[in-house]
Length: 298
View 1 (cartoon, rainbow, N blue to C red):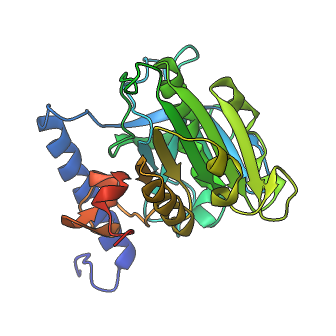
View 2 (view 1 turned 30 degrees about the horizontal axis):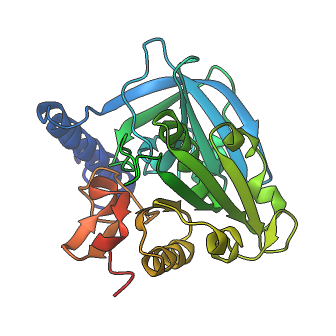
């Protein structure tokens, strides 16, 4: 009887490779105690809310308290019951509700894997690896005249997701938070009322159905007010435009990149970004980078 081999069986090879990859990197993370600990766990789905035609809000919980999570970090989700989805799906951490012990994920339904995630029901188990990546820089510092830092958070599309948790943490650090959130239509920005808890919220839509008509960098607020820090996440052209604006007004700026990812752990090299220090894995070295490290402004 012939043995079972990888030749002619790509599914078996993919499964073995992913098992080895995650086992190796998780062990590496276990022994690297100076780094933030990573977990591979089954969390319980507490609720699934279809907040718009494109986006689904998934609330997860577990019996133990959630670990330390930084704004801007992400999770890698195993997609069960989807034979064609071999790789985990990287999803930004939308919000951490410590009181309810909930982890929120905003998922844009764009392919087979995310369509399967949208079918989750209360009580289902969802296996995730988390928290991954390096988050946004948050400090308790103040401006030169000892006033709270004025922070501008600019998001577009599903890139608005990590800015909710960031706004919460910045607000708790006594900074002034202002959001400019953009979408193609008002439907893209459904469910964003919660952002008002942590700062002022302004909108732009390409069709003018909500807020100013146009792109986020065209909002009148950017010409009227000065900010000490700018944070951004969304489509790359939008973030590049925000980076150019930050450079023009001489303001510190960080961007959360959304490069295509596979492993989420820095081993497969699928998400490499060219930077001033060479090619870096966005999932491991990022996803958040100061714009001075990128080549966008060269």
